[in-house]
Image (cartoon, rainbow, N blue to C red):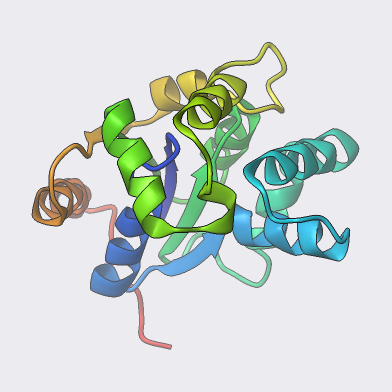
Amino acid sequence: MIIGITGTIGAGKNTAADYIVKKYGFVPRFGSDFIAGEVTRQGLPATRENMRNVANDIRAKYGSGYIMENLLKNLDVKRDNILVGFFRTINEINYFKKLEGKSIIIAIDAEDEVRYKRILQRQSSKDDISWEEFVSAEKAEASSDNPDKQNMTACLKAADIIIHNNSDLENLHSQLDACIKNENESNSFTKARPS
């Protein structure tokens, strides 16, 4: 099974992914790691704007599936339990939905104020921003007519499940467990084999 994760800035995508990987043994693959490597290779600071621009350049040059193709190299999408994060464009989601094997897309969202507080707490260099910069980044990623550019509104709508993460970790974990349990009961999920 492959789980794809999308969601808004600071909603808890990494926290959700870490939980699924640790509890259920999924193999993690993150587009942000791939993009960060390219940002570093180009000698750019790892800001949210540079990450977005480099990702858009990669998609424009190589196509929507390029990042995911690189993430899934050497994995068997029919056999392995894989977690892929974090979709930002509708074409990434469309590419993901065409993969062989059972897949599900989980969107993580939270209220703006909750998300801004979280990004300040995690103290990442790309998140050292003011409220105004946060709102501007949200607008830049909210929608686009180009299916290869950030469009969080469309990504949230395309998700199979939306988790509202406005509470604590226990609540988030409970919602994630319910998603996995539902997939278990549909006989489409198997626990990953130990490596």
